[in-house]
Length: 150
Image 1: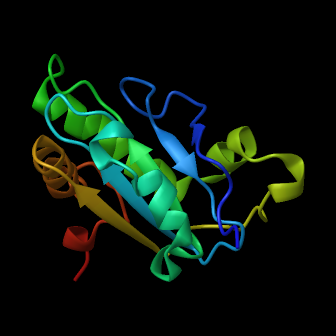
Image 2: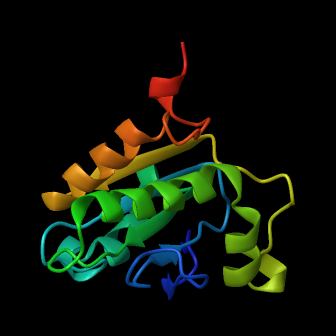
């Protein structure tokens, strides 16, 4: 049974390299998984067959799946973290343009759609970039940051 739409290049200049890909759930549950590769990696190739295996996993049903790309060889860490932080902020606070640009009309979601939870899966340098983005989030005024609450 098909649970996700086919993977597609994410429109909208979301990542530093433009390599972000997404597999939207056909029955979204307001949760997403974001994969970020490591040094000299690739948004899809680093994760082998995940883009084929995850849609068949009951645990990923309902979750939108993003594969985020960046230039691990030539980009500076702090800049990469800031761009990744912007991506996360857009997922949490301004997902509507991403949905409008990347979903066909029959698959569009309501204008009130928002993610309640985003799981970040990071490999190697991707873990450092994502950690830096999360640590910087409160200073940047990102209200979704768990470090900025309580």
